[in-house]
Image (cartoon, helix red, strand yellow):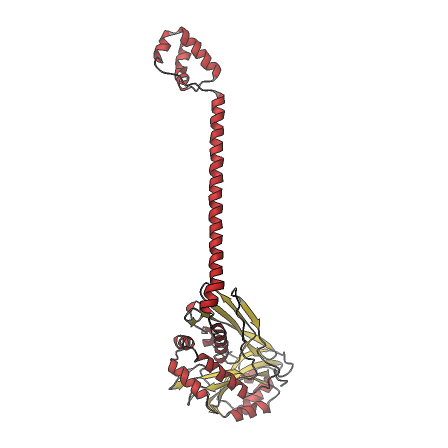
Length: 380
């Protein structure tokens, strides 16, 4: 090997990075060249071989595989602990917190009944066909869809939601209990100008309460249509203009279906979720104004039985506990009278009912194409 080439390779020789053949050639040159030996004198060359390179690479690969297995094990353990935590929280909630704290006594049944009753009493003509309840971490929620009957069909009014916490009762997520009842369900249609071959649902309102017997007589005289809801004043001077509890100096009115079923006595078992269906009109009940009044009285007794219910009404309905109690006492009277009725049926027959009733307030709630097969409940 030439001197200049060997001298350029000395650094690689010392670092041990030369190929074996090249290293042997440099070593042979060093045995003959004192100048090159002087350059590396005192420096011990690194012994390097392809076998050592293979061993080092294998050790690196083994380390990387072990590291990956370790990270995978940590990730698996973390996921397992998270899953165990979620299951533990769910089990604690479903089998301890909700059943023992939230569902203590008859609270869930009373809350379901209160939600059901408020949905019907505050929405003229409202009916309920189903309900759902589910348990959260420390609460139980209720969803109650409401509908308005239009002849032989129904129209959605929305879902009334409530939440029962450990010590409180409110709307879902703490919001308004029955916010959608404030919406105007009227249409722009005029009853006098509706075409033949349609059905209509109309709310009638009186500025002064009419006697219950007179309202029943009107209902009996028009058995070819269905009076599906009747509203009763919550105090003297109430008018059929604003549904609600009102105040002592400005009472409102509350109502119920004339042949509606009672709210269900549900069973809220372990695990949290419950649901059910309910025929909102009972074919075994003869439709009557008195039946609607009895339902309102029952509902008011349930509402005032618990402070948390009255508080919820006061926060979102503008009625104080005293107003709610005053409304209950007034409705418990022998004959509070009727200030509102909701009737549905063929448009021409509804128009005749309105003519005979002669209310000062008439609101067309909904109109549909012909779907009438006869009055709705009790064979009427």
